[in-house]
Length: 373
Ligand SMILES: *Cc1c(COP(=O)(O)O)cnc(C)c1O
Picture 1 (spheres, rainbow, N blue to C red):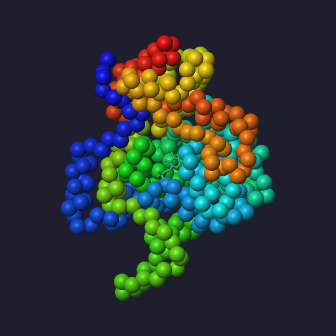
Picture 2: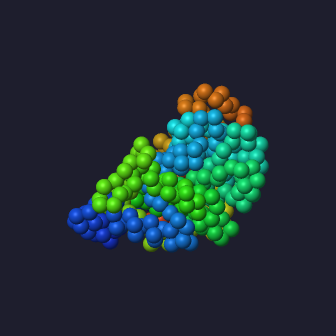
Picture 3: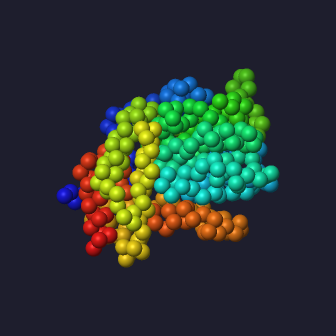
């Protein structure tokens, strides 16, 4: 057994990428420039030629997308209760009302039927999250939203390289937003990108990416909108280009490791394994729900015991309805039974492409040992 510490996620920036970054750093142009252009065109090609724009992070991108779609005060946006906090903050920041809905216990995704029950006269958009890289059932959701005149803004932060019915997430549908944060399947350290066929939205997001600036002939410019600044740097984009080149390979390795976990765990009692999905699952993370009470322990003790055995364990995520920023909406646990349970019981186990098969066995063995101690 290896004594080295195994974190739940670990980005790998290889020697070749570091050399390429060094070239960018020495080139005399280090912020948005040719590397960003190349990264955007390569990513767009990967997504079947969809028009695409990079941003400095997905949170800013989704917020600006909501603004560009004129979603604000008086409007409601339906979000899964089980997601990262950005999913609610962006809605609050534009002055709209977040409407969380419950998710499935195993897939951790929302579905069209649950969304339909949450639609009101004020609903403007739905923001599905492809949890851990497992695609939401998009066909019924798109059909529903089209019939009801709602925008579908996919939070695809976990889903770069994921496929729904064989089609890459971001290559079809309304709007898809990716994150390239350090722990995501493709990283630029911090970064994001939007893919959409809505050219007007894309142009609005381009304007909002850089001060609301329109270039004028002769090197001058005008500012047509008091916008913020969200451009990606060439250094980040150069990392992203290499990450994209190896994305499918690394996602396959993630899938192999996740399937290794299924094999190692079998059919455990009092532990809920994640939905297995198919070849289109990008396995951003492997999270299980543990009935800690049954095992006579709690999550804090469990995490400490795993840590003592050299294994990092994450918590993704506390449900939105319990966050202080949602207190004003008086949301009740009883309306989100699955998200509440996931919030209490979830632990994210190590999963990143450089892990060895034996690491998976080591994690599963340590988990059993800790729970049955
Ligand atoms: C990472 C993440 C985000 C935010 O992405 P950033 O690029 O860090 O702003 C949003 N939603 C989900 C589900 C995420 O995991």
